[in-house]
Image (cartoon, rainbow, N blue to C red):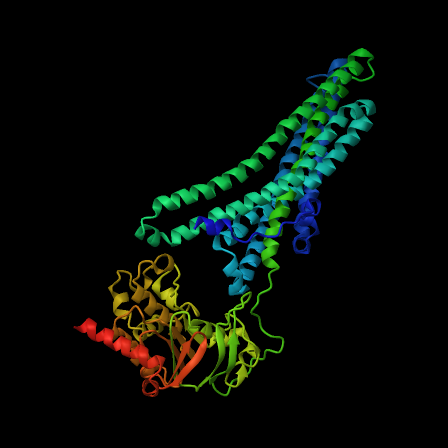
Length: 607
């Protein structure tokens, strides 16, 4: 199981890391959200800039107070009160402004996260089965959780830091140059530029390692999901220790990629502190000389400069942090867009028209099909016809193409034009919603949701009365089983219907397909897990309650098909026989052979 996960298809990596860093801003998809929420971002940025201006006023006020106290021009008890009031007002404005911009900028990133998650899930619903054959559940979960979180941080913290560090840097430098000292500013600020340079240089490496970490998270998520789904098989074959060892390998890979990313990020803060400390040392040395050596700077201005220099460390750090945040968001956005840019294989044709069909006759004309990216022909020149109200039986050995045939009828895969018709209309020209909305399909796997029995049966409508649900269970002969549960139809059946037996799952699935009384009902080996008496009752219900509606039954147990109006026998993708039960027995072909074997086995079992 671990080997399957380790070899899963990886998203294509963008080799141009510089483009990847700014792909968040360049992405038309993200620009759509900037346009949608521009007012919220504008309000947040306005308050962000307002408090940046307010912050840069405080060092000058403190400098004036220090100079005034040193020179004796300010009385501690008299003239200092206005300065205290100014600082207090600025402090309150900063608090209120910070709360406001956080609400609008960080809050907007949550709106964006919600919208992208909705878009992503909606698009996943549209993707064809072929996509899910190549991409596992854990990978999808990584997109909609970890990757989306990284994009959210880029749209929140990233946007904030980009504007904050740019504007605060400009305001601080302006005050340092115009109100303190040009020479001291130049000497002290030059080392701080290295902070932005170093963190910017680490951006491409951070992008690559974060991308690897996200892929490793997808693998570990997929491993756990698959193991939990197959826990019965693991326990039955006593493979717990083997799976634990396999998980350790996958977990070690995730640990290694995570540590690689963390080591890179851990190097950044010490480097920033080292460079800022070096800058402070220069400022204290040269500023002390200007203040105490030649007296060209007052003590208050020197103190203001030190405060400004301390404030300057944040925007310098924020330059690198914003690059890192946007870089990781860009890496995750690329992965998310790789899903959003996938075009579904199965879509409505341009000339699809929703017209009222004269009937629901099914005609298959010279159908040949092979799965995408393969050369093996699954179905070869299949032709047959089923009139509305008839029951079609499909028989064949395992792997002969029976399930593929009905999957093509509901367009889970697409056929060539003019090969499958319903009511004389090419199914490719029928809207998918119309086609599938009139077909009730019970697939082989009998998938049930972790919900109540009632909600599983009333899956399509969701608001049908209990009488309709009960009628559906009576049709599939599962009513007595449901009534035996303590909560009846409100019984939660667990993940994939784990609390139900195989036969109960089959019959609940039949109820779900039947409840809306579709024009075409397809049962793909859906009575294999029930006893013969129950099977006969279900078949009798189909005959009596679906008069005038078309039924397609795939079965290995031929007793389920004896009353079918027409039976087709498929072998190795070819239709080799068709007719009624009696006609096929008289042909003495594959059908007759299979029937005789089953009858012999039945006699042996009875004896």
